Image (cartoon, rainbow over all chains, first blue to last red; front, top):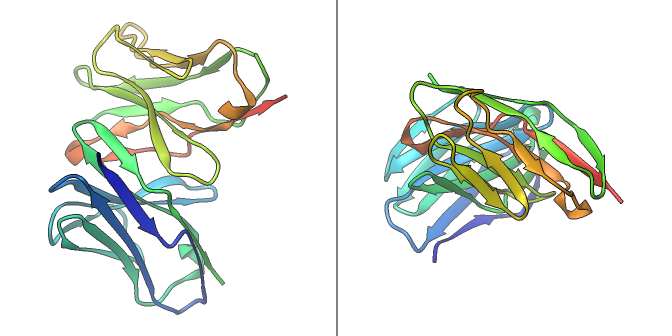
Length: 110
Length: 111
């Protein structure tokens, strides 16, 4: 069976510090991968998606970047965090018409 | 392109009340339709889906019927429980299996 791991579960970072959130999927190959952010008053927003290694598409302009160094690894990064980067970050993968989510990372930028 | 419109929340109900959360869509053809649920502090999970017109998706006592005549996919449950308190999403599915979720509808069930 397939599983998705996302860590850390919570993170508190100062403004201007770097960020690295990691997501890995097990039990499948060549999945489509996604990063979402859920922030108060803004709903669940699709940030990035990837259809393969090194293939990243950004949905919205922002202070973040994503990378996919391996088939089942998806990383969300920032060089310098902003206050507005606070939120609940969710990694997901898809098969056929279904989307499966990780347990999320609650990021607080102070 | 395809789009969905979901009723805004929050929705507050007493336990055992009847639930309806509206979702209407516009689309060319008959795309698959979905309901996802997010329990507090967790990621989203698929609740139910319907792949063609007149299909009924069901799970955990929830139902939704794909009605082409009204272009709707309303979520219903006959008797809600406190444990159903969550945020419910009726997303739009785009190419590359990208799902667009919006703000969802928050359901609060009181004992």
